[in-house]
Image 1 (cartoon, rainbow, N blue to C red):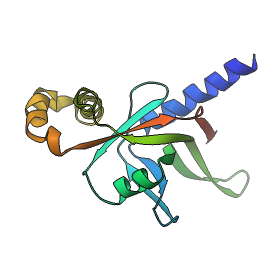
Image 2 (cartoon, one colour; image 1 turned 180 degrees about the horizontal axis):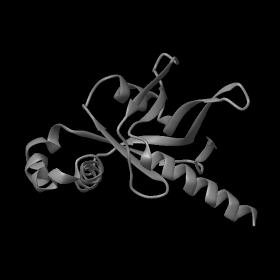
Image 3 (cartoon, rainbow, N blue to C red; image 1 turned 60 degrees about the horizontal axis):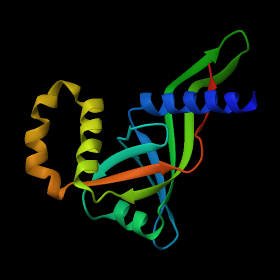
Length: 157
C-alpha cells in the first residue's frame, strides 16, 4: 500500500515537471558556491530528463566539477486573497528531484533528446528538425539528468 502511494506522488510530481515551462536546475560551482538557473527541460521517462546548451560555460563547468543536481518546478502559481478568512495566500503545484547530470557523447542519444525537446516546445516546426540537426548537431551539447530518487511534489489549491 505504501509503495503505491509513493508511486502516485512521484507520478504527480513528474506531471508538474511536464507542465512547467522551465525547471530550475541547481548545481555547485567548482569553487563550492551554488548556481541555479531556469532551463527548458524535457522528460524522456520516469527517471530521465534532458536539456541542451553551449559546449562551454558555467553549466558545463559545474557539471564537470560536481554532477549532482537538484530540479525544482512550479506549474501553477496563483496568489489569492481569501476574503472569508481575511488571509493572503498562494495556491501552487511544485515538485523537486535530485539527479546526476551527464554530458551526452553519443550522437544518436543527442538526436533523440533534441527531438524530444523540439517536440515539446515547438511541435509545429518538426518538419525542419532534420535540417537543423545536420547543421548544428556537432556544436550542440546535450545534458542528461538521471534521477537518483523519486521526485516529490506539494500543492496548495
